[in-house]
Amino acid sequence: MEPVMSALKKLYKSKILPVEKDFNFAEFHSPSLTDTDFDAKPMVLLVGQYSVGKTTFIRYLLERDFPGVNIGPEPTTDKFMAIQWGREERIIPGNALAADANKPFTALTKFGMAFLNRFEGSTCPSPILEKVTFIDTPGVLSGEKQMSGRTYNFPEIVAWFAERCDRILLLFDAHKLDISDEFKLAIDALKGNDDKVRVVLNKADMETQKLMRVYGALMWSLGKITQTPEVLRVYVGSFWDQKLRFPENEQLIEAEMRDLLADLRSLPRNSAIRKINETIKRARMTKVHVLVINHLRNQFGMFGKESLQKKLLENLLDEFKKVQKEFGLPAGDFPNVAKFRDTLAMFPIHKFPKLNKKQIALLDELTSKDIPHLMELLPSSDSRSPNDTEAYAANPFQESAEKHLGDGAWVIDGTAKKNYDVEFYKWNLTADGKMTGQVAKQMLLKTGVNTQLLRKIWDLSDIDKDGALDTDEFAVAMYLVGKLKSGELTEPPEQLQFNEVPPSKRNYDERFA
Picture 1 (spheres, rainbow, N blue to C red):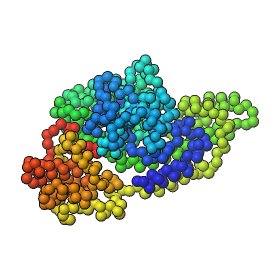
Picture 2 (tube, rainbow, N blue to C red):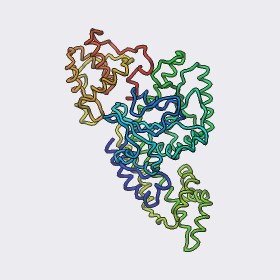
Picture 3 (cartoon, rainbow, N blue to C red):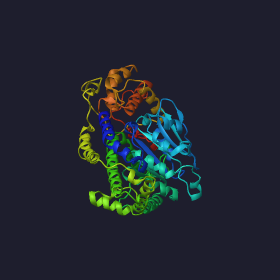
Picture 4 (cartoon, rainbow, N blue to C red):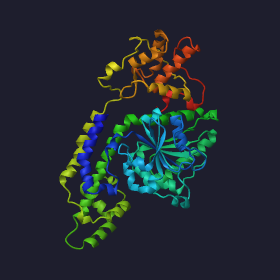
């Protein structure tokens, strides 16, 4: 992916960024992109009213507490928090986090100290965080009085993160579906990022009849707010470490939870495509912005500049329509009229530079030629670099080992998994974070288990049959080795089995890891 991102950065800097600077695009829309915006890990933004389980959801995925975690029925999360990977557990204040050029938060400085004092980072060595960053938000408040207590514009901050995140989760509590005024504003701020939004009906462990009524009520409420003909995908779940109380819905809830986790698990694979897509959107927005500014500028003469600017601002929607008709542009590419008018009022329109037609040609070339070529460079899901061919051998204990893996998956509890993860990251791994067969062989032989049994363990633990072990597959191997050494097993099973344990500990290989 690195060559693709490198090429994308060059295209942005050479064809989009110069136009943005000439026509003050960042003042009207969002700050210019930096290298860290392209290199950043996928981010997941969680938005919801207080006590809907946002922080608990993150803890569920990490299967551990993280610095700064605070869970309770009252509004306990009072800050925006970026949960990231780090070797040490620590809290990073917002001002320091925004000043770090290696983090994708430098543009947040434009919101000032009032916001940065309510923003912080949390780092911990969770394997999940090596692939994705979570953005936890303060619980959305109810009532105008509580909203006025914030020292920053909550919807504006949500909109900034929404533009840069790969997935946006709107969480609702199945026991209280009221949608406050501030929550409506936050949902409105997500417009333009509809493809990233997923809805989660949390705490849905209840009687079937009641769950059906709650689900229907949520769909009705969302329809009124989003006002779109498309039906939003709503995931039903109970994301915490307790056993479900109503077994009649257990199969449904677990299937829904697996679907959501599978969706999140796909984010690292699709991150490059998402960034390419965002770059295309930015190029289109920049083109519309430039054409509108140039259209307005061309109407000025030698005299009456102030009165003409006032007239153009008053009739801005009509001017948009003229530009749309002249250049055949989609109406959906145009900015919000009111917001654009407010920003434009701060600039003397006649002082904007004259449009260079080569700039528009470069933007068109980027969307019609450069990006399609870049898409061809993206590796297929099963592609592997030539250097990996030798590293990803088959069973390192026998070249033609017989494969006999069933459809199930072994059960490993969270405590054991954390210990296995610590051991896994002590070894030399490939660029994509896997343990090759030869490294695994070296490690497994040190356990003292004989080679014949290790050959069977490899067949079971190499679940995806790619000749290498990820953290989950390594955990399976170590689990089986431990069972053999303790005497609980005399030989590995014929296939992996399911155990009856709480949902949060079942099928760890299906977790987001």
